[in-house]
Amino acid sequence: MALSAVKSWFGRHASSQAEAPELTRKVEPVLALGVAPPLIQPGPPPTWTPDRLVTTDALWGEGYQFPGGEIETLRLAKPLGLSKASSLLLIGAGAGGPACSLAVQLGVWVSGFEADSNLVAAAVDRIARRNLTRRAQTEVWNPAEPHFREHFYHHGLLLEALHGSKPEPTLAAIAKALKPSGHLMMLEVVADKPLDPANPIVAAWAHLERRDPRALPTETAITRILGRLGFDVRVAEDVSDRHIHQALMGWRSTVRTMEDTRPTRRQAMRCVQEAELWMLRLRLLRTGKLRLMRWHAIGGG
Image (cartoon, rainbow, N blue to C red):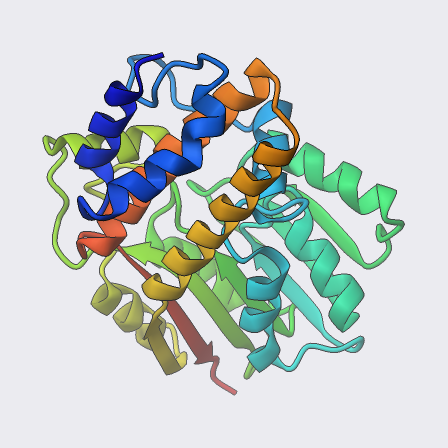
């Protein structure tokens, strides 16, 4: 393994040249195993295999697919005023981490929905192993044809739920699913300007995250759609900086663990592949081409 090849990759994809040496040091335990450097290769994007779930569990916490894990989930949920008397529509439920945390920590009844069947299977298993099946469930939903039980849920929490769906029909289905005056907390990636699919960084990120770079909504579009659906938008906050910080913290912790416990070649390869995706996402966030937004809105009475 030529370390210079990896340094070159980080030099191209890090947010600044000053950051490249730090990131190179982070993957040196991986490089020692002779794993190929994280360069974009043709082929299908990564799927939620058991190996990948082991990697994301180590990065973000068991059952989580995003930085911050349980801490960020509870931070988002706190303003909703959830309790044992509340029902929650959770879209973007991942591998069960959010549903378990919300049910255990807040006592809320959670109905989770996830578009990926592998994540749903992992969530169902995790919820069962924690004996939470009465209070939390997760099932598959179709982003192309969103439909949920109408006027049933007290509140809603959306964790990048628009991935693979059109904003207006999805948010309309969610609005119908909430009871009057229900609160909605929403976390979503936006692009203020249309992304250029020909840009190699954009193209690589879109490939690895299975996104259409031309279909990302803007902050303004989401806010207007919520307004048309009768929501009173109380908060529209850019949380990109916190997301970046949480991502770097997760990677630092994982690399420290790797230094203490040498990973297998298979584990190292999966880690490098995941690092590639996150390097691209963080670069687009740092340059402002992407932003991560949080909305808190209240439905009509």
